[in-house]
Image (tube, rainbow, N blue to C red; front, side, top):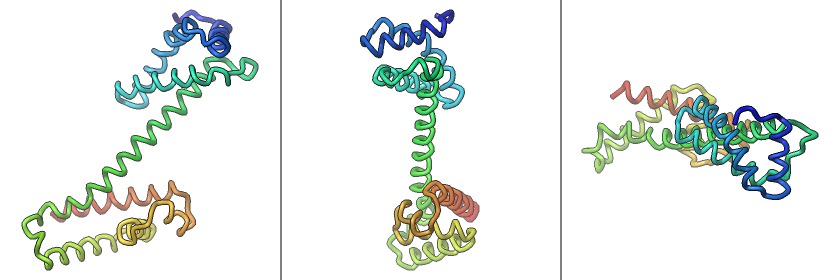
Length: 189
């Protein structure tokens, strides 16, 4: 179904919008599905996520078809804009999960060589001091964020407001600081 005109795509989308026409939606799905999957495979680098992108995009097309206005743009532009936005959301979600997992993993790196001495208060004190000295070696902006999140138990949003910087900047500084700490800890062990 690659030889469909722009007008036909717009007409199909309008049928979905006005009549909830399942046959029209199926034709749209067959037309856009492979294109969305190809984009997803290329940009999300996982076939499962590419298929999820197809499903999520076409679900939004079905639900929001009434928002499509043929006078404002082509059906392909409308659908691909939805696809792109969902793709960005998926990438943000993956990145956020990666940051959460990474920050959870930094403490076990330091503890891995010390498990036998967990009950020893002296060993715990030494580990804490070693970690604090590593934090002191970070650039100031990364130190502020790492100390704020892990020592003062502030949320990312609270730190953003306290430092008067965007939330994304706080997260980037935290990620960079944690990467440096992790590398330093792995080298030290």
